[in-house]
Length: 159
Length: 159
DNA sequence: TCAGTTTTTGTAATCATTATTAAATGATAA
DNA sequence: TTATCATTTAATAATGATTACAAAAACTGA
Ligand SMILES: [Mn+2]
Ligand SMILES: [Mn+2]
Ligand SMILES: [Zn+2]
Ligand SMILES: [Zn+2]
Image (cartoon, rainbow over all chains, first blue to last red; front, side):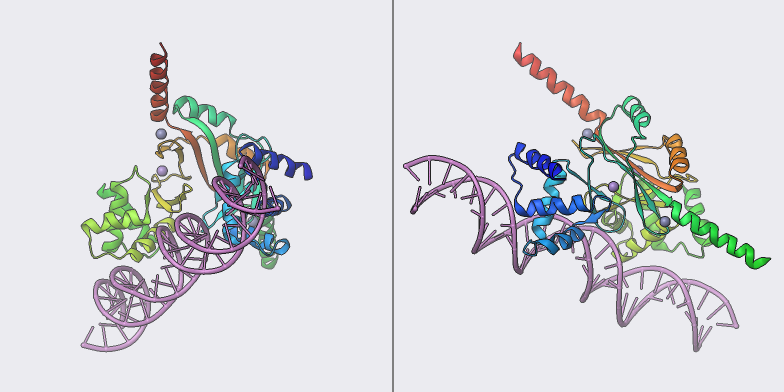
């Protein structure tokens, strides 16, 4: 964890930015909630718990900076807010998401998946891919289980 | 074109909605600008040209209704606005997009592309896919040409 | 015609994000 | 050390997209 912070610090320094206390607090919140998909407001509230003096604008500015340096990716799942997601160290592309239309859960796919598709796009459309966003909307395994058990209940009631 | 409107009308009726004049005007604008990716405001301004009495709220409500019926898809390319895109008749899934980070152009890919990937996701992650969003960010063929000719210029100046 | 329902309009309210500005902090060099 | 300049921050105002609301209009079916 500390080494991850250190590498981010170096990354900032390499672009002549500093890892100020506010920026470090923000990065720590992102690291501590790596599995979540936090909005700027979410991050702000979490940072405030440990650094109550931080301002909302600073969080917005920090997230924007981190996105510019490709440390985080900004993504929008269709509700009105942008969400911020730590990119895996050294990953060339953003990972993929599964959004459940029943329960709203967002799961991640870190596997590549798009290698072949990208070859087709680069060759057939002559488009030089720099990054991508891939999100599937559907029913997560948890909600499918639930549906199954509801069906079983129904069947039981009929017998 | 007329038949397309008729089918949309039937689709609305089948869910006991009416194709009011305002809704028809909105749909016509979408049909006449099928290749574009219009924001609600864009649609509003275009509808106003022929139906100046329409209200912005009506356009928003109509677009929301059309999205609910899967006649249009709502998508967000990262600027602050939602954009609305007619879905191809009978298409099970939304089509894909190529967003150029140089010139901002948005091109479409109507080909399926994700068939194999979806099989993997359904099997390995046990996720029942209902729809998807796939956007590539990169350099379009137009901007690549431009970069090439700029390189050639540079080379010429050096000789 | 009348009552009930749906839809629309115009506008106010909300909510996320960005801009602004003055203060604080940090680095640099005399 | 102290003056100076650049960077960063905090608080808050402004903006811009979207949604909520209330009254009027249009439509429907007895
Ligand atoms: Mn993620
Ligand atoms: Mn499109
Ligand atoms: Zn679910
Ligand atoms: Zn381009």
